[in-house]
Structures are given as structure tokens and as C-alpha cells.
Image 1 (cartoon, rainbow, N blue to C red):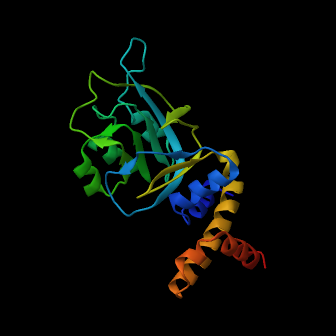
Image 2 (tube, rainbow, N blue to C red):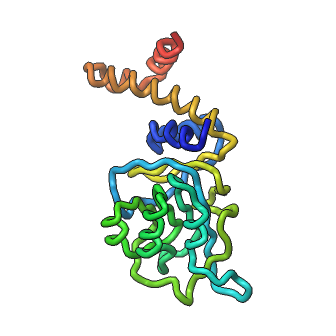
Image 3 (cartoon, rainbow, N blue to C red):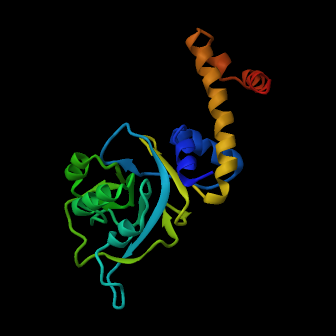
Length: 222
């Protein structure tokens, strides 16, 4: 599959279904506490282009945080920022403007972001832990981009994939995509049958029961 095909297939499932698939396979990936700051109700899926932020120190590259990742990203990529602070912004409006110009699908910030209204007006989905007005200047610097980052305790490599929506953000390692998609397909099919029967008037206790789960497995295996 191409990267575009992977993103499109992942986008067919919400973050909860992907999280359930990861659980079923014993894989990490779900991140707690990241919420949509803009564009609520919109589901996004794409490939991660990573950014690592941290305290200013001597010897760091002389570039604005996030700019290198935007320039290196492909159309449809998602900028994923390891930040770690919710009291200082790790993303802002001019970066959002540059990201939209490049065709970036969304931005994930493990920490604070600012210029939320501007990003919303630009139509860019931004997920973060908090919205703050305080600048990163003099407080935060970019340590690297297109490198391994840690987001909510989950290690994310550039080229991994993610799904983000109103329930949160879930990462899928590139090497796990096929098995996660297969598990997500089975889970979605089972839950569609359960929703059908609830809508048809079946008692919720029966539908959610263990015996009913076994019946659904038989039905979906036909």
C-alpha cells in the first residue's frame, strides 16, 4: 500500500476502534489528554512528521521551531510535536499558516499551543493539551525534527501513522499497520451488528452479553 492508501484506510475507523485493535494485539499507541483545539468533529489520519522541543541550550540549530518539519513534510502528513509543557506554546499561527500552505493535514502538540483562533480560521486541525497565549521565544527551542519522539509515553517514529478525532489520538507504528487494520475491520464489523440489533429493539443487556459476543463471532465468520 502507498502512504496515501494507508491513511485512507485508517481514516475509515475512529480512534476508539483503532485503540481497541491495538489493545487486542497487545500494542501501545493510544495517548491520553490530547484534544482538538480547532475543527471539532473532524477525523484526521496521516503519516507523522516529528518535531522534538526542549529547553534552550548551546549548540542547537538556529531555526524556528517547527519550520524544518513543515519544509520536509509531504502533502497529507501530520506534524507531531514532542513538547512536554502546557504553560508555553509549542505551536503558533504563522506555523499553521505555513503548514496549510504546504498541505499538512493536521498538527499534534503534546503540550500547549497558541493562536487557536487563527488556526481555526485557516481550517487546520490542531490537537494539543492546552491553549495558551505565552510565546516559546526564550523558553523553548527545537532540538531536532524527523526523529523519534515521545508523545504521552508513546514512542513515535517519523513515518508512523495516526488517527485523531474527538476521543483522542492513537498512533500506529508503520510495521503494525496491516495487522491493526485487519483487527479494526473485525471490530468495526462486530460493533455494526451490535448497533443494528440495538436499533432493532434487542435488549442492551443481551447485546452486550458474552453469549451474544460468541453469536456475533459466528455471524461475522460466515
